[in-house]
Image 1 (cartoon, rainbow, N blue to C red):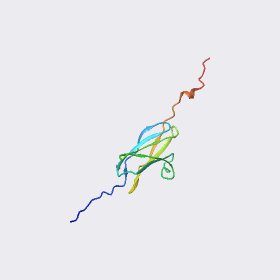
Image 2: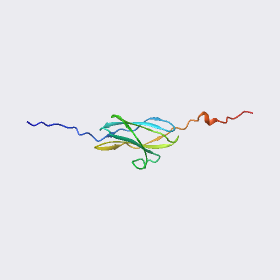
Image 3: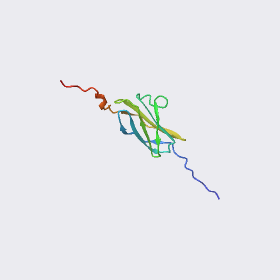
Image 4: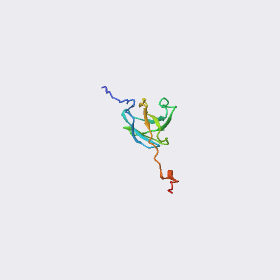
Length: 122
């Protein structure tokens, strides 16, 4: 008697497009849906140059993977400035990266401290 056992090997990750969930003057929060494959490592490359948004040539944060999506929050950014982002996901079979997207931080909102010397009326 011969028994055949089927083993699912897995899939190389396939990622959707970057969705920006929130933009502030100094941060972005984002997510990307995982369309196929199990993610074992993920992150976000970002910078102010589209050409340099990749591993080793731009800033990077570690992403959070929950099986169905990758989430990330980039902080410490400059208000009212354009940034380029790319998300990656990988497992033992390979890796996948999203297309590069351009996002602009919100303008800085003046605070009460900005008005330390109010004008006086004569």
